[in-house]
Length: 231
Image (cartoon, rainbow, N blue to C red):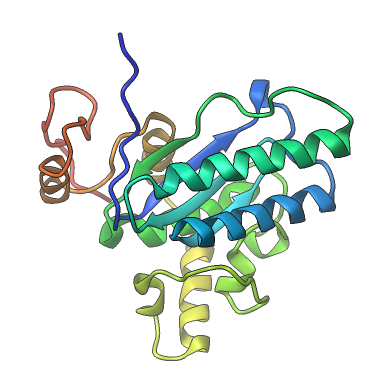
């Protein structure tokens, strides 16, 4: 069966995942982390992709982005991939590919899943046992979102701005949201949609999205709505 093309719809947030081949490391040192973060910021800006959140894990990374135009996300990811492979191979004295095939991405309904997806990224190191809390992990956008650091290159989503009328109010509201955590079913849905490329949203959102693309937005029959609304 032919592989479906990625579902990318300009103007909507996308959860993007890129993994290392055979689960091998894609970053080993602080220099590697800083380089990859720099490549992501620079290429997002060059491609016209708004970078809302990110987390760099030892053998993969997650992004939450909104591309402005058709093809922008692909250009950004191709450039990030090429640049980081060159950097990593020089640093590690290796050759060959670094990535496990093509990147994966899923379109998200903003109102239902944008903030949850941000928290999902921030809590990924905690779930993996790499940090006690999201704020303890230095290689994500979490500290910027809670006011503990300045991470240039980020473009906070309007739903993040709507969390409060002042920077302190927004930062505290978001910190509280992450501290509450995510229920296991929501973590499962975000993981599954990201890995398999199916859009995530309620029935009305998915029906409207299907009208904008010939590619199926859900697993199963084209245009078939889910039986359960978004959490």
